[in-house]
Image (cartoon, rainbow, N blue to C red; front, side):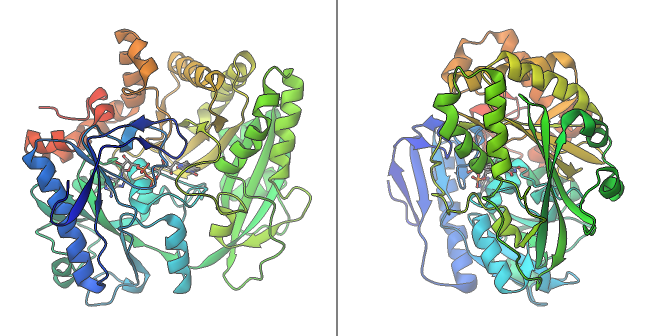
Length: 532
Ligand SMILES: Cc1cc2nc3c(=O)[nH]c(=O)nc-3n(C[C@H](O)[C@H](O)[C@H](O)COP(=O)(O)OP(=O)(O)OC[C@H]3O[C@@H](n4cnc5c(N)ncnc54)[C@H](O)[C@@H]3O)c2cc1C
């Protein structure tokens, strides 16, 4: 089907980056990209998206935007119309005083939803700016990354949603511009150029829309508050987990240098992460300080330490790993982690994008070379001891065959942001190759965590215990599904965040049909879809 402004391709199989989600929606829509530029281009794009939304409304069907399709959860898919945003990727670096009332408009960046993190790095770098933090990779789109609470480990910065200062959102009833009341950003001129029909300065709505995984409408653009360009200096160290435990449970970042005997020339600690090999209980530290942008790059580091890097390393082994005695498994995993770290050098210096890229070879952004799984759990650092006790046992008793990666994220301002613990959330990721054993190990980890009563949350873009379109979930009993649902939502319920998010969504989308349009099986299974 062809609308005036966009194409709705006939139904075809859609598959995500890591290959764990496949769906055949009614249609995959892709707005035309016109050759015009400037404000006409922005307005044209907006009208294309509005036409797609109006078409879904006429047919009373669901519609959901997706970006890089890097999420491992079912957040980005629906059975009706899925919208491919990847070519909606214009980036306007540095606003003028005509466009913004903010103090430093030159550090504000207007970016369309589908801009990849890699492209943002490049465009910002050309103008001497940088993103305050990113995840450990660069293939996500800005809207996809923000919408699931993507983060890095710059523990004083927060998640990527925490540097968004304005949201341009398209719904069935209009073109909405959202800002915080106490941080005004846009001028009427900018809003007119973007065809905004509703201007809202509302802190509660803004915080709710930030991490909303497609449920508030289609995000056309964000304004980001960026920082002057910088480089990072990367160091690594090798510890026994038990010797590190007290310090990771009570991370005293200003004094970690002395407590953990970090490099003597380290400046102010900026980034801190730990990867734990459960089979040897070794803990590998990667930590960084910020250095001026004109610092000479020093020896390019080893291959990047990222989820894809680690997965590829583990996958090379995966066939051989099966059936290996655990001591041998631990040795092999340890070697692969060490190969990705500058353990044998003092340090190296590089731009963030060269450190947090997927691998030395730039990868295919659409499909991973290796199918994978990963879940990411948020908890209070003081619960890390109890967490690792469970995690080591799960690794021992299942075919987990992977490692646990720990990072820290400052408490987020987004209502459903999952890095909600104060003052920082400890986040643990489990990159694994896609085997039945890995899947069973994940289920076991979730079950043990649930029983432990350790307060925890889940990354909305990684594997979740609730997977309504996965065939095996259909075989789970009602009680098990209810327990999994409660596990995902418990922290938002206890803190009142869930009620606030639902109220904000109802305020923005007062009609039940509008709320239904922007829901999907996942949000319905979690009772975040249509409610009265
Ligand atoms: C190799 C790899 C490395 C990763 N590393 C990290 C990491 O270091 N840190 C971390 O926190 N996470 C990490 N992740 C998870 C990843 O950051 C998230 O899954 C992120 O959401 C993916 O972005 P995307 O552009 O692919 O979004 P998608 O997966 O396409 O979509 C994510 C969500 O955003 C919504 N969405 C997308 N575009 C729009 C729009 N225009 N309007 C409204 N809603 C929209 C979708 O509906 C969906 O709910 C990693 C994932 C992979 C595969």
